Structure formats: structure tokens, C-alpha cells
Length: 397
Length: 219
Image (cartoon, rainbow over all chains, first blue to last red; front, top):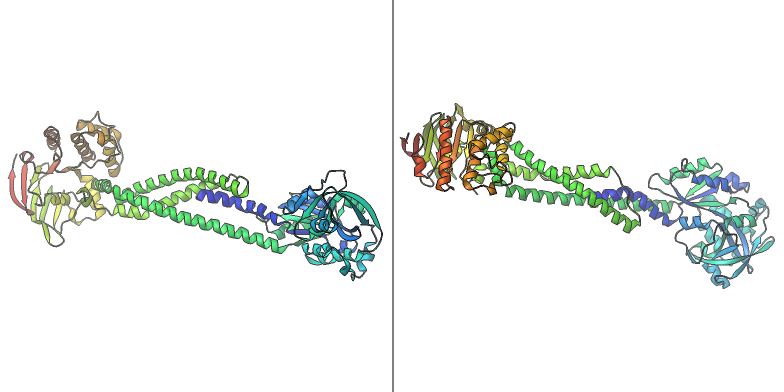
């Protein structure tokens, strides 16, 4: 049991951390204020540095996003360009009816949010004509007032901002909002392949492939932001965020603190539970060993009496019983380790859908703990053994 | 060799098992102690074996007043000077004859397999070394017990009803062994109910209600 729990506990943080990545991204990478004011976005070359595991630790996955605005059948809508294989990893809760956009396909495909699909009556396989707003000067649009937000029929833009934190979260959607219903639109036809349901802002958005978006929005190899999923079991997320900012100059990160804290709490609680179960198991095992050893001493009291009668000192009697307990503990430890390792695999497979790794250190921990447990639990029974009066036991009482 | 002076033993302050007992057994002497049940024979043997303490009086063995020794000192004295033979043999059931003998060596000093084999040869069990007690007859088990008592070369052999559980033929083998040990100079004290044993040895001490009622030279 101890072996099972230690094996699982050693892998737990990693496994739970990966499970918790189902919560979605816990870090957002944005251009810093200077770049933002210059209308400069993040480049794909910069984003590729997130793969540099030598310099940046614990990035589990990331998805770049490029936003723009457009119209479908005169309805304003937020157009999102992204890499969908990455979204599957960073936002695994997305439900897609039909199929995902294929990042590598040459075909112009689109996925629409479920509310957009309902509002406009779209079905899988329909052709969607997306009117993409032609690019205007960024600074000019940024300074314009945002008093037209009330006219937006589809509420994707305001709710999209909720997925971000900080200044950028407030500024970039407003930036887009200010551009709504202005400028020229270029029509482009897409084949509808999937309808997205997330229960969030994505239900009001439309999604096209990042490369196609970059081409249509005239933002070649650029993105607005990157949602990053960071494992928090080894290092605090703040450390990873700092590494990213150092490795990609001109950027800033925003930690989605609610998700990070929730992850930390869950991991701590699970670990505490594991420790508690381990301690209770050890106490239970200790009582069991004590009971067994007490029975052994009672059954062998004549033998002990005889040993004393032929001259055995108390320390030699104690040594015999401690040696027996230690040997039993050692054999139990070896058997326990093997069974525990197998049990850990069963638990790992059924709970985390993956096997628990081999940890060499569990072997000495298991063996030492079982031997120590056996010795400590034998203290009272051995004390009883050395108190045995040979005169009484040899008389047969 | 063994002297008791005003030896008394009471249980629960009511039952007087030994009452002001004075006996003296010389070195190399074979003394038999007889008496009815409850006369204090086994209690006397336990006190002489340093397994029990008297309520009053003292026991001097080989010049050492053993009644003044601590528990550990008594165990050490017993280990060095006394070999015990029990009516019930008291062998460890899961050890072989050889291992049972070697166990006494282990508690005394160091294990010497050859010496242990020689001791078993001496009691006529050279062919039964690897047999566990369950595979030995009562007489053979008692012979293993005698080999165990002898293995550390004690000066004194104390035996409590050594033939009590044996048939006549096996009893004779055991008594022959005691004769052999006596010839070799061991001091032997046997507690017995058997009148035939009572006629052997050098001296017979009769006990009644914890007192010596008769003491005669038999040799």
C-alpha cells in the first residue's frame, strides 16, 4: 500500500498537472505596451521560441490567436485565426459538431460558434461568405471613440475580452469594437466544417486557419496573442512566465491566476490526502504487525522460557525476535514493492489513463519503511518476551 | 560445591514450599532428591538452577552466592556452570537435533558444529543429527536434551524427572548416560519419583513439606 501510494505520489504532480491542463490556458502572451502602441504584433518566429525546452520550462501547449472583424450576412462578427491542432491541446473542452479546421489543408474552411450558427441558420457543409474588413491604420482606429458598441448584434467581442486579463484585455477588443461598421469589406467564401460550442465567447465567434487569416488580414506571420498552457507541478507559473518574457523580448505575460491557484490547491489537497492515507496505512500495518508478534510471543513462550533456562540473555532473545521481525519486514517490503508497483499501474491507468513511472528511490523507501515499521511494532511484544519467567513457562503454565 | 543455608521459599505468603532447608552436595557427587508431590523438589531444583530465587536463605555454588546475583548475572552463571535436563525435553520443534544443541552454544559463546556433533555422538545420536524432535523418540529427544546440557561443559548437571516420560528401555539408556557423566566428574543432581534412580548415585535426599526428612549415602 505504501509502495503504491509513494509510486503514485511521485508521479501524481505531473499526472494531475496534465489532467488540470483540461482547465485550459493559464498564461497569455501579449505584445508589451511599446509594441502595442506601435501596432506591432507577435511574430511566429518569436512564438516558436516557446518550443525551446532548454530555455523555457514546463510549456505543455500553446495556441496563437489572430483576431479581426468581419460581417456575415450583414451581422458583425469576430473572426479568429488560429492553429486548431494546438487549440485541441490548450482548450480540450471545446465541443465541435462536424470536424475541426485542418491546419494543413489548402481548402478554405470555417468553424462557427454555436450561437452564430443558430442565429444565421447555418449547417455543416454550407458555404459561408465572410466579409473581411480591409486593414486601416491601426493608430487612427485606436484613438476613435467606442460609442458604437451597443449596436453589435453578436456579443462575441465583449465576451471575448473576458478570456484575457490586464490592460491588453481591455484595449484590444475595444480597438476592434471601434472599427466595427467602418471601412471596406472584402467577401471570401468558406466551407462550414464545424460548429463550436464552449459555453463561452467562442460561441459567438468564427474560426479560420491562422495562415489564411494572416493572409486575409494582411498580418503575415503575426498574431495578437498566444494562450499558453503551463505545467505547474515542477516550477511556479511565475518562473515560467518570467522565462518567456526574457526569451521573447518585447512581450508581456498575464497569469490567469484563478486557474493557477485552483490547480495548486487541487494538487496540494490530493497530495495531503495521499500522505494521510499512507500514514493511516502505516499505523494500521503497525498495529497488525504488533498483534501478530504478540501472538507469536505467546505461542512461543515455552521456547523463550527454555532459551532463558539454557542461559540466553534478554538481549539475545530480543535480537532473535527483532531479527525475525526485520526479516519478515524485508520480505514483506519486497513483496509489497512488487505488488505496490503493479497496483500503482492499475490506479495510474484507470485514473490518469497512463502508467506510473519507475522510481528507483521507492525501493529503498519501501524496504526501509517496512523493516522499520516491523521493528518498531515489535517493541512491545519483544518487551513481553524478555519478561517471560522460565520457571512458569517450563512448568507448563 | 552446592550448599544451601536456611533456604525458604514461600508463594503468596501462605504456601511454604521450602522451609529452612540446609543441604550440601560435594563436587563430583551424584545426589538424587525424592519426595512426594508438593514436597518442594522442583522448587529446590529451580533455585539451584538460578532460575528462581528463595524467599529467605542463600545458595552457594562453586563459592558464589548465587542468590545475591542479578537476573542477568544469574543467567550468565547458569550458562557457564549448569546444564539443565527437563522431563519435557523442551527442544525447539523446528530445529534439528544438531541445531538444538548448537543453540545452547550460541547463547554461551560461539557455535562449533563439530563439538555439537561430538556431543550428540556421545549420547548415541550421531545418526540422528538432522532429525527434528517430532521425528525422534522420547528417549532420543531426552538424549538430545542431555547433549544440549553438556555442550558448554558445565560442572553441574541438574535434571528434573529425566526419565519421567520414558519407557524402561529408554530410561535405562538415559541413566547409563548419567553414570557416564558422573564417572567423568560432573556433579549431578536429579529430582525424581523413580525409586530405582533413588538407589543410584552417591546420595539420596528425601524431602517432605519443604524440609529434609532423610538423607542417606547410597553409593
